[in-house]
Image (cartoon, rainbow, N blue to C red; front, side):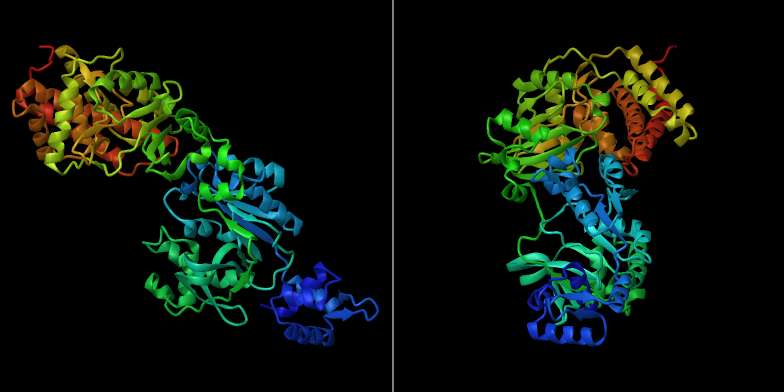
Length: 614
């Protein structure tokens, strides 16, 4: 860190600054600061008015500062913020308010106060929410297309051109900075740090007496830790980004924070991840120690509630308001919030209220187009006497919001455990034989037509033989219609993950979004394709459900629904892909089921006359 530059900066910012204030600002002893001032006076950097005692910058001091002018800032805002659910289901973490001011807006305003106007925000999750900042503050948005499955190393990599040849702040959108710590001039690369007493899991910094970073340890005790803003000088970026780029190109680094690269360089361990970087020297970065209560990184909603009491009972979040209303409690009693694994159609979070655990489900974007929530509620109401579903506390047929009890210690069914599978099929049998009816059906033809319509031709662009396969599915639908088989209430989404095995030995079937009247064989077929069963496993499942008494017609219907189900859910995934949600190889697997099981049907003589028109 250039101490002469820091001295000049402090005088530039406050002419009537005292020697004691200068020492405190530069974290120097009074004696060291006195020597520094004396040398700066002798070198013609500054002048001292003997009458007023005021310091002033001379031409040489002004020229020295010019190379330290901060050119720009990059703000990371691509992530989801899972520890702030359900608030972040609606609002990116950086756009949450603290004392009535959005965290990212506060930082932008502080940057502007320091004369930094070239600001780029790297966005990803709910990127559209940040668009207004372009007009309000003149910022630029940079989209990170990998935000959903990679960490900040990738986000910084995507913004690398914003750093090259510039002096640039690197900020997180969800930091709250009490006093403005940004400057027009910065005299060396630094990482903000706060002191944490006792044991901590934060990244602890090691530094020389002059503040140069020498190492990083994950976890420690009574330590200065990485916390808050970072400053990249152009010299630091020139040395650092070639290494970060190598990390990005190396498999296995996808979930790394960008700080891991810095830590590895400081610790001399970069070669463990990128062998070619084994002897790469660490670029110079200094510790920037901040006083207590200056920099805040809120870890979860509970921490934010302590800081800003508005969040105790008025989070202005629909899900939190609903939970409080349904359970007749203030929002402050909704605690231990955790994001559950987001499903293909819903987002859910776990929480506690008065010593009991619950799950709140929030419909995902666009699901009102795909799922009839009024019908789902009708199913839950109809099956309640059976006691086979989760205990639903609240369900809205309009919005699709659902609150249910969480079963502590429960586990999901295992499709590779035939003992589990047998119990799952036993419950499905109980549903099919219950005699319960609802006023709506699950119509495979209607669903295929519907998903095809919302794909808008995207499916034909993806699959060369789509029209050919579609014709095969039409043939199967016609043959099933001719059989005119009895319909029962079916779950439709009978994946093993939807079966909960409780600690007391009970079993529950959850998530009845697609349920309706249909041929009962559809639940067995869906269980097969959801479990990615091969032909041998598919036959074993059918035998378990039918207790070994399998008719040719049952097998024909079973195969038909495997093919049709694969085709249907392939279309579903194609639609999701068209709106930016990807599910890996799922689309290919489902399409393959459609083709393979159609082939099994048309090549087996036992099925020749079943449902045929001759």
